[in-house]
Image (cartoon, rainbow, N blue to C red):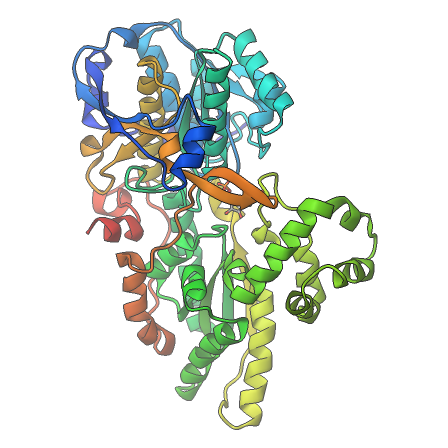
Length: 551
Ligand code: FBP
């Protein structure tokens, strides 16, 4: 394959590491804190994770580590949606393993967790790794969303681990995949298998974070990529002066990406699902908020604007949330019956007798495309596939209707022509920013130290991320510490707790303080493309979210 000039240059980029990892690895020892508790539901989780619950936090300190040079065989899995930097996690893990012992081997399981279950793997060589350093995507081994949940699947994972004589498996994934990592840890321990399990916090959605996981990797690059595109659209909108752009942004349930893009680009309206839920806002109220900006701007003869919409919005509007929950439960219990109905009319009739009165009325009032999108298959973890619901088009349709009413009453005199966009896949496989390239390489190298030191049931953690990389703090956080019980596929399941946007946090407050001005005036900011070379304050900056959270 021919490579681009940037790709060639990025191959040579040497990711920065925290100081403790950039010197002799023989001097990286571990120190442990107190036993930990889960994020919630500790009794139920302690019972479920009898052998792996409550481990202490592991910190890296200078000292002798007898185990670090032993030869290891490790398997790695890329799980879930792509996130920029995944290749660097693998490169950091590989370099760490080889630094520890040249005879260590790293296997890459193909196509996500199913690669482990079906024992499909490649052994990485230096040449393979070099072809993927500092590049985006997960194409080095591919990814997948298989959830390891049946007894047969657990047994298959164990068989592969035994057959391959794996010292450890590293699962690079989001909340669901790291839940899998916790379940696998317990299963291996219960079956006296010594294979260790280590997780790595990946997801552009930014919702796998807490005190010890400051950011999931890929969020930085994806949010910056979307912000570049939004800035370009803002300039286009201001140049042409004739369109309102409704832009839906990926991020699943959490609005972290939308919030970060809002802070970067200062759009006229930036909806945040978590606020919608907290205020119990109905779809009508959301549309009124958008229309209020359209009307205010039209009074100043401005008939263009930009609206940012988190892709999970629809799940947070109380009436929609109730409907989706009822649909989820019905689909979990009678999914086959529903899919047997070949026409949409038959599906509506089938639901007619089963949905509650309120939910049924709402379902029937939705445009048919949206109603059909709500019936689409759930992902293997029981989530509604919000990226496939055209919320931006639904909002445009509702805003058009509302503005017509306002026009008829004389309250609005402008022109409204709207365009719909969805930015998601465009940002998931971009070349990782320097931040993600460095962060991911550090996460991979940290995973190696955790494995070599004999730990299992931990997630690789690198903290202090707003400081220069040499001051970053690597370590290991017990997976059970981040878990709680949630309803999935209609029943309570142990899962890693999702971190949604904090309405009391500085990033949201900064948006809230400014949005009235941004709604009426044109205050757009144009972040431009990610810079990979140049002054550090241009090319090594973390997200505004991270900076505000740490300020
Ligand atoms: P992860 O949670 O696996 O990191 O996936 C993130 C994501 O990009 C979401 O933002 C989006 O809703 C979803 O994946 C889309 O899934 P798919 O790639 O299966 O279409």
